[in-house]
Length: 317
Picture 1 (cartoon, rainbow, N blue to C red):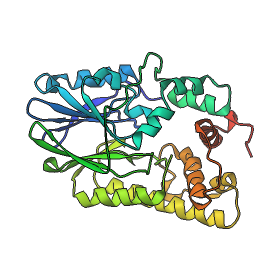
Picture 2: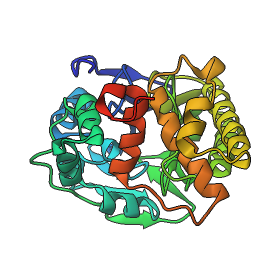
Picture 3: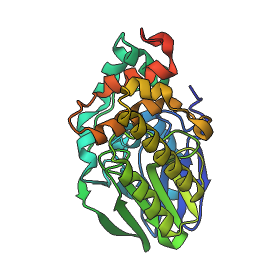
Picture 4: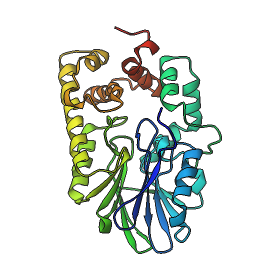
């Protein structure tokens, strides 16, 4: 697991700033700050309190004169909101769809998952073992919105657009037009494999097109380095490829496990966290067969463990 000391404050265009955890792997998400006159907006908190405190300390010279009055959680995965209790005096905003994920997977669920002596538990300990989930008091958003809302942050216009369900049940992008900057949440994983927990795939592809159409020159992904719209094209290409490949194997009658093993990743093989293919293929099969029983979190992590750590699973064929 990557060192937690590598996080850094990056100044972007205009009044925008990013807090990057450069490894960008499981749980190592990014955050952002938009500084207006006398107030700031924070984009996402981090996966545990220690990481969130470090990020808030890193922004302290900016927020001393422009306190954080507004927080946006881009979606309901814990690495984007488990630190909310440290900013709970602010108005915390999320799309309505995000609440479902937040209520279903809270810090206690992560602790229980990692305690299991199962393939999913052992895999979870491997990728999340460096985070501290005890002591987190879940603080849900105080304001929900539908589709789109425009905020005035001390004279700076900030647009929130719900492009989900896609990666999750609700996915907010945060657009700062004057700075030609967009914080995408997990609509973009720069250098890593996208994971389609929810879908449909078409919505995520449409989200990429929407962000490209905004004309932003600076793209802050949910994970990985600051990038440009090229990362949106790359994300779109991966999603279309996996959907096409999985659909063909579904039509041929392959099981999900066999399809996952059969799909060649080709030019996408160098992306980190390639085991997410197991989740993505399962999502395609569920789109094509709505009667297919969904897997719970442990079941999905079992499938990824088979790819990432065959020794964790009895299924090594």
